Image (cartoon, rainbow, N blue to C red):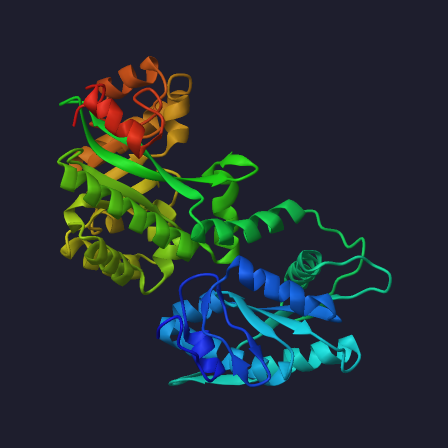
Length: 447
């Protein structure tokens, strides 16, 4: 459907994917689904100017439903939820503001808030038929009501509704909560970051940095790990440890992960076309991404769309992700491997690997967790574990990468242990693509 083509029902509204889309409906009139823009925010502000309140409605366990029944079933669930919200909203404006989140503007309060919220919760909780399966899409609702004498603009009311929604979820989900002044909000900054991260993914605030992996025998760079950074307009550079947990908790990790994978493949294609940096690109995969039944298909689709050969891509999957469901992991990894992608086990040594299962997995590389490397010069146990992982990799004919190598003492011990490959600040910190190209031109990095 073209962006300028109007739709006539809520099913089309909910069925559209692609980010922070906004479906607006007032009475029986609707506008085409499109990305959330400044204009949309102004329209919400206009809607809220004389409104009695705003609701944020979030489908509980939506990712679990997606994983259990597939994305097509998830789309049908979104469509049905949107249809019910449209019926409940009547002439009130409603918006789809996220993958599984909706916003309703209460123009005029038609009944007591508690009764209204409970009726909405019950209506949305009625069973949905998803092909052969029937599910109850339980929802959590956060409400912000206009208070007499209070100066509440649109942004403040939406933020208050978000606080109330989070409170409802923390109390067990499948419930509603109305914002009250002074309501504890220990993680207000986290909520704000979640909201801003949604915008950042779509507005170009994210950037990939690349950290080289060095093969010790040839002294050549053989791989570049793509690492995402957030260039926040006011907070400056935000590191992954600050926003990846937020992305995983909010469900944004699937969209963020796809962005990272696509951008890394685009960069690899650009380097290949320019005849430089003829090495693999490795991309970290979140456990939530790896659990998604459609993950392998999306990887192969992105490779096709970007014109990147699968042999140029390595996927880094944590040990714990693989061991969570080894049989399913084996099936997915086999699909990726047979199509030419390489797979490495990240953070190896801190999970609960079965060595019997490990030998069955189609992996090419083990990455020793940096906690062992960090302490190996001072802790004999960490040194022994590092030696054991290196020997295991050699016996299984796997490349072994020591992560987090920061000083010459660590490097010397790794060489004595016959480690094949290193990565860390001793070689290079993560750098921007342009800086990496400059290092290659100056022959400070050899591929």
